[in-house]
Amino acid sequence: MSDTPNQISGDFPKALRDEFAPDFSTRAPDDLETYGRDWTRVYPAQPSLIAFPRTTDEVARLLRLCSKHSVAVVPSGGRTGLAGGAVASNGEVVISLDRMNRMGPVDTLAQTVRVQAGAITEAVHRHCETSGLTWPVDFASKGSSQVGGNIATNAGGVKVIKYGSTRQWVLGLEVVTMDGTILELNGALEKNNTGADLKQLFIGSEGTLGVITEATLKLTRVPGDLDVFFFALSDMGAVLRLFLEARRAPFTLMAFETMSANCLEQSARHFGLKKPLETDAQAYVLMEVERPVSSNAGELLEQWLTDLFEKELVLDGTKAQSPREARELWMLREGVAEALYQKAFLHKNDIAVPVSELEPFVREMDALFRERHSDFEVAVWGHIGDGNLHINTLKPDAVSKVEFMKRCHEADQALFEIVRSHHGSVSAEHGIGLLKKDALHFTRTADELRYLRLLKSAFDPKGLLNPGKIFD
Ligand SMILES: Cc1cc2nc3c(=O)[nH]c(=O)nc-3n(C[C@H](O)[C@H](O)[C@H](O)COP(=O)(O)OP(=O)(O)OC[C@H]3O[C@@H](n4cnc5c(N)ncnc54)[C@H](O)[C@@H]3O)c2cc1C
Image 1 (cartoon, protein in one colour):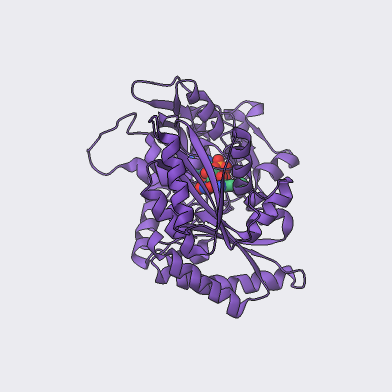
Image 2 (image 1 turned 120 degrees about the vertical axis):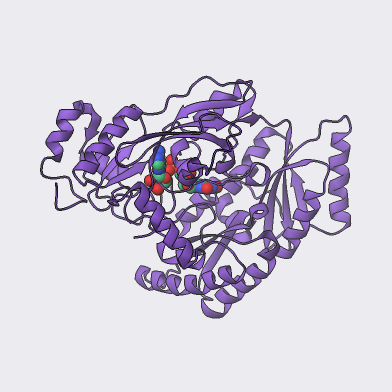
């Protein structure tokens, strides 16, 4: 047995060669660099080896071998994670699900599909679309993220307001635990009241309890005609009043996204798009609705819009007149994350509070930055219906990176106190990974953490699976 659990040494390399074909794994420097990091881009990539299993059996055999030789393993999906969950910085073996991307036939009666965990999110959408169905897990990184990663992070996204998060759209899981046990959890059952639902433990556990190898996904019908609106509003209070009005409206709300003026400015500049509204405002909202199926749907929508202006709920607004305009509006919103990266070095937060707490939360957050960090530019966007805000702090040119990170850490402590006082979460959808470990106690009590640790040691007593993620 190796003395250094995070390094491959001793008999392990030979055992791996004996067990698997030569193309099963790679130690090529480019691959180590690529597969050792995720989108957070702040941690060094230092894995020892990248393995590419094709089947669940290969995953089980690999984990059994790693367990026997005390080698740490990092499960890796599309590496679009924003919390460092898939990062391998300590000589771990990365287990990439890239080759496990097969998708079974769509069951149109049950509205389900069984896929391997490495299937790309958008490929699943396309696969199901031909049957008039979709897996409604949707966000900007869907072209690279994988089903296994989505499930391991219980991903949110732009349609949570309508569909809920990933957890709601998983019927069954096949999972391999660190000792090589293959668990088949819940199959394709809609109903199964036979005790605790083990599958739920793996959803959102960020690869710390087991490797997800297959999933039975629950599907829903592809939505009908969609309309996309863009509004300018005076402040967060106005955004929430519009949200209330939209919830009462005669249509189905599919998305209700907000962004601050500097997010819109930067996104428009980055993608070379015209700003959709001339009116200067503090906040903007992108709203997508599914048109009601009725002969007077258009009139109902027009009337609703007229009322908004009469009640002075919005400063300005527009509706996409073509699919292209709708796509551009979405690009302005979904491109914010990428566009901000081009503007400055960023510090990111992804918090949630109950929707009814958003207005006071934003007031207190604004005061914090105004009073203590007035030289920081803060860019905020988020998913209002979920009480989820992405708070980005941009490094001023005059401040060094080291000084900036030190001050961001101070600001975070104050920010997370505000989050806690509003009964919120320090990570709404990106997870904890490496990035938010120090902040976990703002949201989880000591008792909760004690049970989470017990759970971890039940599934992974040697602490070899994604070590150091969520907690040490
Ligand atoms: C531009 C952009 C926009 C984004 N927008 C959103 C958004 O709106 N909402 C949102 O929730 N997220 C968003 N994200 C974050 C990210 O895309 C999601 O967290 C996504 O679900 C991660 O999937 P992945 O396959 O890339 O996982 P990875 O980054 O590869 O891994 C994420 C975590 O899951 C674990 N993991 C991966 N695969 C498995 C597996 N098969 N079994 C067990 N554990 C596994 C990893 O170890 C890691 O802890 C965004 C990211 C980017 C870059």
